[in-house]
Length: 262
Image 1 (cartoon, rainbow, N blue to C red):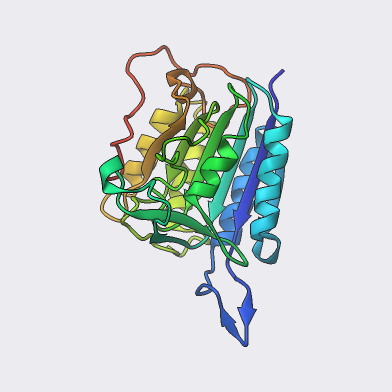
Image 2: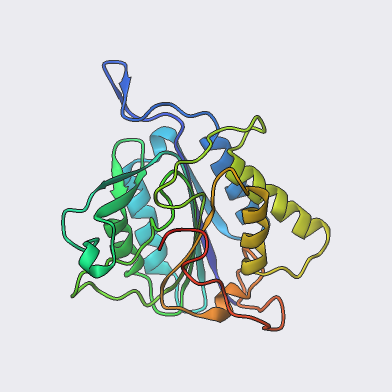
């Protein structure tokens, strides 16, 4: 029987020095992360929730490493992040335009610092081949925050990864729509609730497409595959621990060009 572990990170308030926060305070991120944890638990994941001061760089990295050391092929790791996201200058050349990059790294803003996409790629590479990684990032500049680094010599990622992000790399997101969640999480939760209520056979492709339609004209959710590409993963019911295909295959998964600028 497959095993599912999940991690849910929500950062409304960051570390403050002399009354000055690292990042401007937000209102909905902890709610959003808590809702992701509730969805995970309803699907029988072993869920961990890291809000605000618990969401340090070290705590997040250690949690991902624990999952990587535990899970084996056929298992799944579900990680969600809700908080600020930024772009920083690429310092190691893996985002060079000559390699197809934009010269920038994307980040998650934790309670006490940033985790850049290069660090996340290194963490994904610790997962065993055949493990599925589902990442949901409700943050600015989240289009490719899970991107596998392009630099030659980088350890390949044997796991099968899928990122559904709130927006393109070059976009920012709306933080609050009055629902208690961000617009992205609101759309995701409403889509999920409809799937459950109607016993829909939707797979990840349909799940993403419905979220994308709900946010039309406000922001552009991203669909990004990383690591080992496996179309069967994208045919599974959302948040499924068992490796089961939701629908008979009629078309391939969206390419990495859908939903962002890649």
